[in-house]
Image (tube, rainbow, N blue to C red; front, side, top):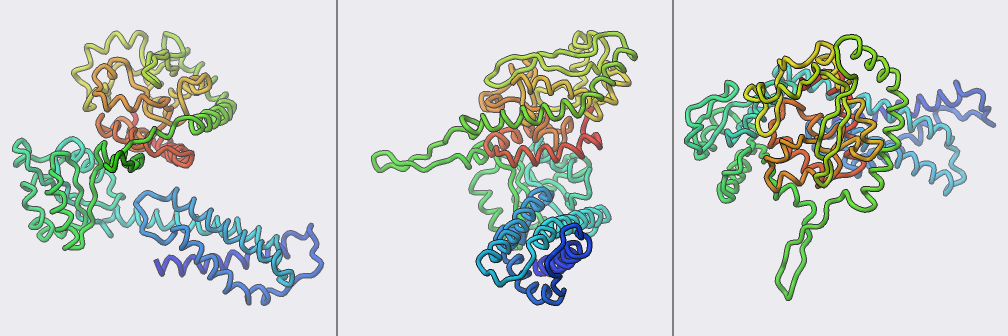
Length: 464
């Protein structure tokens, strides 16, 4: 934290020097009454540095950050720099004798934000590169060898830049004894936690199974605290709705009440208006691309340009979802023959080498171009820009009651499933992410998911 604050201070100092030269040496079209000496600015810069660093601390920039929280970090930077600049502008009005140029403050605002954001991006890339080379990697033990634990291990192994090295699993289930998942062994039962932590120098323990009792979890937490080991737990459904829990009382008896989901009333209206604005913008921007691929589809394979598929939307209402046709004509009639070859757990059907996909369709799917016509679904109110994945009717028939919670809001073109693995995600993991999104919705969360979608689409991660 001290090192980060030190470098932030240097960049803030440099930003104000650049802002001074930009104002008095570049912006010559705005002629100042007099040009103050740079030394005069240097005298007050120490005060500015202390104020800005204190603000950065207050907004949470120097707290321990979760991995992958770059978007949140940059948002906090924007807030900190903006508050610091507004305080300086306020001082100019309170103390008339303060000669600081307002244009210098404006220039320092955007220069500091750019420099500090760039430094965060470079630092993140350096950390990820170090992790890829085995530097700063944390030995990780996963408790639970079920579907969720296996999915976590797979993702950590596949992306070394995350900074985790999985040493193996611990599980009490007899079916898991002596087995290997993704090349990682089940080391024994949960009673061996202490032994494995010491032997393999474990730095992170993750509980990824619902079969562990509360008492056992508390024991494991105590052991982790004793050895200075980080402890994480994959939340269950009850933990996910904890943000909406209110404490009430009836006749002196304490009661726990769960409030309505956030996407209701005014919040739902704000989200809908935002969807319409974004949708119109993207339709105008992508209109040449839509036209070009419509022509290519017609020229490369027989059949219609668009594919209309029945999906289940908000409140279990069925609608036709628009997509560019990426498969051969009448591909739906082949689903019963191919269903035994599905490579996705749960109620979803996915095949990497699906024989129904055309060569152009494979390209469109890789970069999500086939999804662009869904902008019209958003425009007419059947979908949202961000939300849960719209399921097929045959998938919904197999849902449990709690899984239907993901149908309480409009489905989205993108969402937590898209930025977290897309086709690689197990069904239970996808539902968990969707419910977390519904319980914690905000415009900022929508913006973050939209921003995270860009690199996922450009790199074609998890799409097939």
